[in-house]
Length: 364
Image (tube, rainbow, N blue to C red; front, top):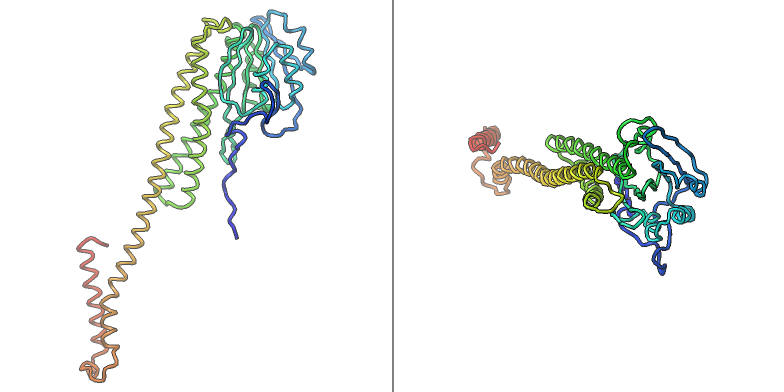
């Protein structure tokens, strides 16, 4: 009977980039990702330094009346599998079909694309399952325009609800700044989530290390493997994000204003810190695997040592028993009255002598 694997399967759809389809021309909008059935939701928050209003948008055409205004607009689209709706939004905001294709393809690499009328950014969110501690990846695509940010989310994650509350309540600087600061605020939330995931990984590594020292076993090996896999997920996500933030900071695009560069520089420093922490955790995980192998080898050596001592103790006893178990007719000791007790005395003395010798040599 085959044993069932205890590991959650790798999310290959997120881990391996895939093209939209065979024999499709460039710019063909086609959904690539996990099949979903949730209804696509469009929310709009329009704000300036004096007030903020939230709207629920039923059809993309309803956004026409908001586009000409000078207020900053955050248009949040939850769900990217409806390619028809994505295409209609692209026509409304004059988005290139290559970007629309990447929005619907959830296996894209984080990157920045500069156009005359907007900037296109792809981020990856790391979400931690509170039950099995597995890491999942979701894609967030941003269209940064002059007075708007159009964000595309795979699911209705509550990760950005704090930013929504800050805008509506007027807390922080977001309502006093331009649209590039809104893009920064979204990126900052994504990068802060990396810290949370790494903190959880660090706590888990400490627990595994303690268990590994006390009682190494197959459970430790499974936990170390799961941790190495989780770190691969994180590394695959974070490295391109650092390049993305660096490109935004150095960009001379007119939609990236000078007063916002310092904020992007700050989250760039955060990504560097995250990568340094990630490398340290990866080294610790590799060291734990070495420690596990060493502990298992030491445990095996201890077992072999005990078995060897028992074998060595029985060698003289086996010799005595073999000599007096021979079938020769004339053995002088066979006629001794105290031959049997003397045999046991020799066995006990030999055993005690060997134990004392082993202890003197510090073998036991």
